[in-house]
Image 1 (cartoon, rainbow, N blue to C red):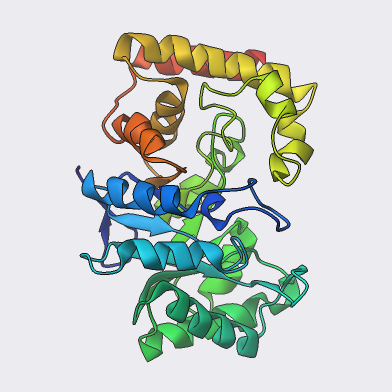
Image 2: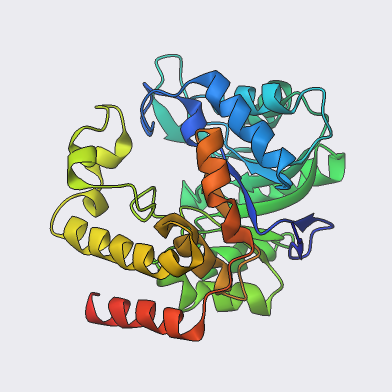
Length: 317
C-alpha cells in the first residue's frame, strides 16, 4: 500500500488507518454497543498484515479499554504508528468531562503510554477544544510533551481555523483530525484549504458517517441497534435526515457496483480525493470489515462519478 507525507511530521502514512473507537466496547457515554475483544484484536492484526501502518484511538474510547486493546494487538510485532488523544476525561463513576489543564494532560499521557504498552506516542492530539479558555494551556502542554520525547508529533481534533491560529502562536500544529464525509462535508469549504495552505496533515474521521454510508445500514437495523449505541440518538440516523442519507448510500452502492466494491469503499475514496486529506480513519470491528474496506486505499473515482455525488449533494442539501 502506498504512503503519503503526513503534514509537517516525519511520518509517511497509508491512505487508510485503523479507527479503534468502537473497540472500546459498550456501557459508556459514546459507545457503539458491545464489542468482542478478540474480534477487535484480530481486526487490527489483519489490517496491519494487509499494509495499513497506523492506528487511531483515544483515551476516552471505552474509558481506556480501546487503548488497552490496541496495546494487546501490537504486542510482540513491528509497531505501527500509534495515534491517540487527550482532553476528554472521566471519573470513577464513568462520567465524562473535558480538561485542558496541564496536570490533567500529564496524567493522561502517562496512563495512555501504560495502556498502549509503548515508550512514545507517535501522534498525540487534543481531542476537543474544550474548555475553550484553556486551549492555550493544553497546547503548551502538548508542546512540552514533545520536547520531553513522550510524543513524536502533536496535533488537534475538531478545531476551527480560529482555534488552529491560536494554537500556532505557541507551537506548530502538525495535524488536524476533523469529521469529513459526504454527510458532513462542511470542512472542505475553509478548514481543509487552510490546512493545505499551512502544511497541516489531515486524517479525516467518520468518512462513512459512522456506518450510515457503509451500504449495510437500513431503518430496521437502526431500530435494532443496542440501547447503548450512541447512533440511536443522532439526528443523522433519524428522520428527516435518515431517508436522505440512506438514498445517498444507495447511490454509493450504484457507483461501487462496476468497481466490485460496496458503498463504504466509495465513501472513503471520495474523502481521499480531497488533496488536503492525508488519510482516512476507517472504523473496523472484524476481519471481514477490514478486508471489505481495504480497496478504498487504491480506488480512484472517475470524474463522472464525482459529478454524480456532487449533483446529489446539491439537490439534497
